[in-house]
Length: 427
Image: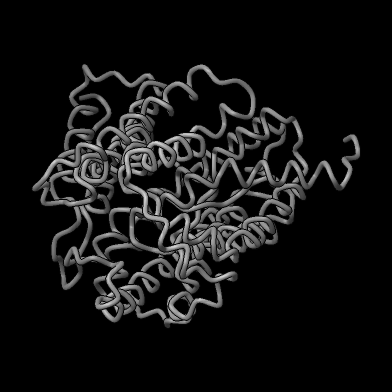
């Protein structure tokens, strides 16, 4: 491999941060968590991943979209205004429960990594064939669709009492921008449609009078100099049946996505990372990173396909570049003014982004079914997908079961796996 100068590595590392930035801060913005802590968790998590994967895999970790719904229902079950200082104690109390659930999800990843090491990845993949994983991923996207509409058209009001006309215009501008960039842009710009759309949305919101600059007056130079940030980070996790039962099972659903991401990353680089360093090591890295994110108060981490796209464009596969990107993310997370800017993005801007992103998640599930060339003339495939879709969407945020609040996604996944195992292949 041709030697790369330090200056070039720094530029390439910054580019990787820009590629993951929009998606990573979107998750805490939607859920009510802190974007600065999410950036910090992503940076630290990426470094821990590289440690677990022996520094061989050029991967960046960011906030996982799969956990959005369960984090929202756990962090703010009563739908209060989390920006109101009067709800601070409520927020911190629920954040402790969320932390416990995310840490538990990380431990589930660790357990899965041990199982993969013992039985092999092929045996585990048989439990989650495309007919199971495709509809499950569709459920993830479809369950989030009301959140996107609430933010895009109603200013985040789930009751949908008044249509926010100006907000809807901004959301439409954001959607059109994302479409144009994704379809017509070339090179690096094609990799950052979210970031560009958010910037354009910002400008549109300012023109329409939807942006309030007053929050910048109280911004701290350094993130950790804000006492509320320190409270968020140092709030101890609490492991409750409700929190663990709602959040941790999502790891059982999305670990297969990790295997797909590592396979794709290896295909771009030209190496088999499933074998060396081994998917059990990369899964361990995901688990450790997610558990640490939980302790810090950030969302669960996952490997990011955005950064794999950057690898494909630049043809620079040096894992050290991704570690430089991780350091950039940590530094950015400590810039107080950047944190305030992120938190004051109008909801209509993120709503416009979410309309496409959540739809794309559901579409990925459809793509999995198409790529597997599944024949839906067979009753078996229809039955499995139908049950997963109805249970996952119909149950939604969860039902009480054996003292736990179990999400529809978890119930749908378990049902899908069981039915796939017991139904004969002939029907």
